[in-house]
Image (cartoon, rainbow, N blue to C red; front, side, top):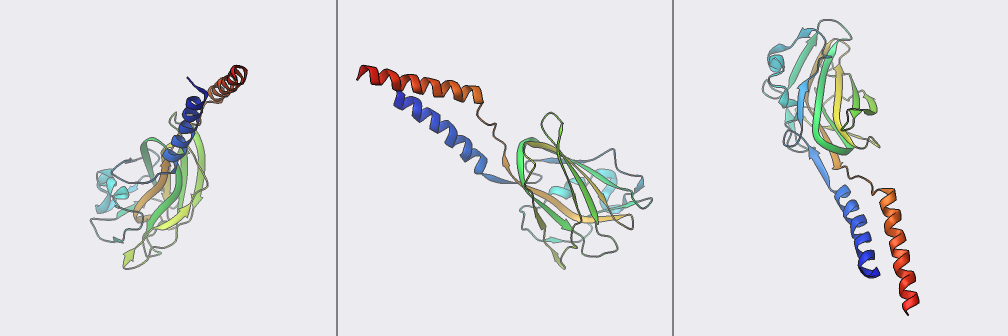
Length: 210
């Protein structure tokens, strides 16, 4: 293989990696799943929760900037038996992503809205790679739009747990979504070193032949 061809291969790999990483995707019910976690406190699941059977409503917003309207078919309402109790949600992205933005559609009334969410982020091996606590703003009314929370990290996330609580034991909200880019493994350092050595050898060989 000529030096020029090797060089082209080298830069093609680097550019392909950067290109794949740069394509953002909105994560919702089309490409992730959500379930009720075992950490959910005892409580009253109300008519919008149905014991978890309707939990997919949490991730059904089509886009990050879509409007949600609060009604019995669209929102999730959970009531813990005591203050401090909450609802645990478990997200599975199916593959690793670098999360950029968290989107949260909160209820628009202080009596029932979500006051705190504790997120934990896990890689494909289910090892924790980050954590985040937020106090979501009240949703807008009558159309509820997402609060967008920029995240500097975490990277290489497949699983996310979220524990939602309200100061009066109420948890009422519309949607959760994520904007992310597909995680692309960094080029192996040893492989890059070998390729660099081959390029250097090729350059030296061409000089001797010249």
